[in-house]
Length: 340
Ligand SMILES: [Mn+2]
Image (cartoon, rainbow, N blue to C red):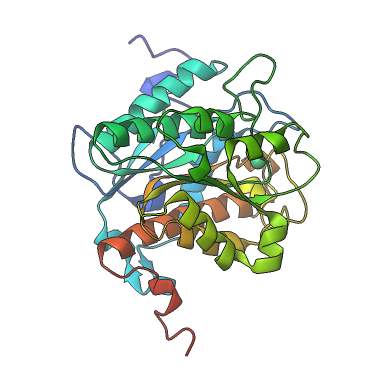
């Protein structure tokens, strides 16, 4: 029996939840070994402390991959063979350490660094929102080393996530945006958030976002101006010179009518159409990193609609990357004569 072959991890299966099948049936690779790729899918099946009803976001990568099998490589909206245009693979899930945020984050960070080091853009499925911080850190540090920085960041979320700590732990789902703003490689005035709303944001977060000089586009602004205008403004703030940004989607930015499977649902949020449009605009220049977090399959409807939407957002991000590579940026607007 090898070291790992215990009754809890039989036959070398690394985790009960994870690794199969690969996202959109792209090839699975255990390791990149320096192989070139345009994008690499990675699962982060980790949740630390839950601040409301719990919900195993650790099962999200598995469920999202499952629903992604609905999609083919051709995307009608873009009239484009996305997977034909891109070299994409799935390197499975991070081998997390349940209950240990710091150790799990370190493992994620090194895998994301491996992806970026191979010249690919990471597409990560969480996990709770805490996991966005180590992913952004890895991307930002690599960009700094290679002269590609600084990194702009756009986050779709109901919550500002600006806690200094939660029960003395500085690495939880309550703090990722604060940790990101504190990174030396990130200018907090180029951190934009879209969809912020509601009475679950504690009062101390509001002065903090102003102090950081962040660009906050509230849910009300989306209602008043429309997602297109808001996402365009956010992209301009996060990337004034058109460089790819890191885009993080906390699925709770979406209304529970469209995405009920999450820990902290908040009524009055974005529609499925709005989040798709927002992702398409924010990933227009491609992306330095992309993630969807806070999907809790155990709270989802029986249809799996939240995991399905998360999978769709991953497919749309890849379409943006393919369009950028083929010189067909924003093709979704005109592919079938839209506007005519
Ligand atoms: Mn949130």
